[in-house]
Image (cartoon, rainbow, N blue to C red):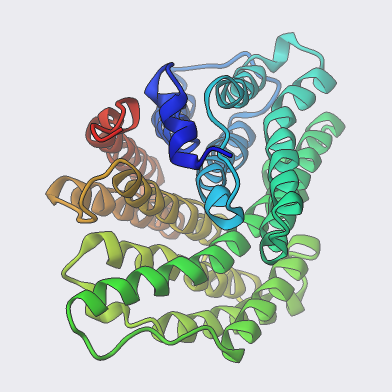
Length: 398
């Protein structure tokens, strides 16, 4: 049986279809720029879309179920072959999967001219096909350890399906259960997968520098923190306004602050490629505590502002961190972030900060939304400029 490397070398088509991270990371970054530019146009009234969704619902859907689904696909299509020892999806099947994702974006944007059921089926086609492919690999490879990742992918798909149902029912999908389910799935993905890669990559970097203080290994405390977050997310998704949701969100946030502190992140200031992972993970407890505060004391912070700590901060920064690191590693580059990469991380952090301030200072909301959007566009635009050539070109060593 051919190895993964042999399978990729055997592909004679465009290099971008030689591995899953290539088309989906590049597509996700392009969509992050295009969708944010459209969102700014919708906010100012200078742009419009032939979609049945209101602007806020379109914005929420396309960043959560459009952008995030693409980055999840790129990560899983790259990681699962390593987990299972089986072959990656390459070539025409990979191009077909990516085409389904693009079709979903177009169907949502032009939904005013299409039947609602058709739009939902087109939008759900890619993640459902991806889930089937991942399930097959896990079962055949007997890689039962990663079944929770598949379960979280299915939860993300469920959130998307609920969103479509809410939109068709005429409710407010931007503030509905579908978004909460999808966002909860995204946060648990970061907690579970981030709980593997953040301390692992940190340990490798510190060990190469002969540091004695290394991240703590996975222990019972991590299980408690993950369980608490899962419970908090279930309560929040089902009963966002219940007092118990605010309490468990706050408790889970405090536990994950403690979890993050065990990973020696303070010692990684010398390498942006490592410290950005800690910063991305930090938005998980920050968002949890902020949403708990919004629940228990609504005058403290708005729910939407707190929620963006998860959406723009946790999802945005962690996916960008993973995309940069994976692209460097899988294209044969040194695992080091240069000034340009460090700058795009800082731009995204500024985007999150401006969006949070827009919720805290409504009087300056329009200006802060614009600043946030421009910083976001600059961050992902910089990723396209710096990493696009790496994603489009074959490795020189084959």
